[in-house]
Image (cartoon, helix red, strand yellow):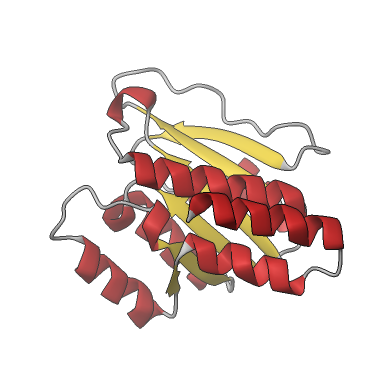
Length: 176
């Protein structure tokens, strides 16, 4: 019932910690195991010409989109259509930056009727002072802050497939 959205700044702007990258990689791998559709959203710097906003092939588990730095993914029809085609009700969002792009994307998802969870351990704030107000805003709007290990553990408990359960368990153990 869920889809994963990973938001990343342009390569030269990504100064997030190794822990944030580690948790993003773990949840992305777990989503692959569980066949959860993953949307990878990359922002490009405003001084560069915007690349075409395009999705990966329809049979791919990972959809890739590039959009302008200060535009919300919800304003891009290709992203909205690709997400709608997956027919999911829960959005799991992680990436940079919590108080800006991630929170905005989460709030728009809530407005569109999705249940939204933000993986706070995989979602740094640009400003250390912004984390708590951003989390409060998310909660006030009906979003849920979660940690990545919680999501992976829930998937592990829910799957009836022993091989998937084992893969998720090994992933969790490697992350701890």
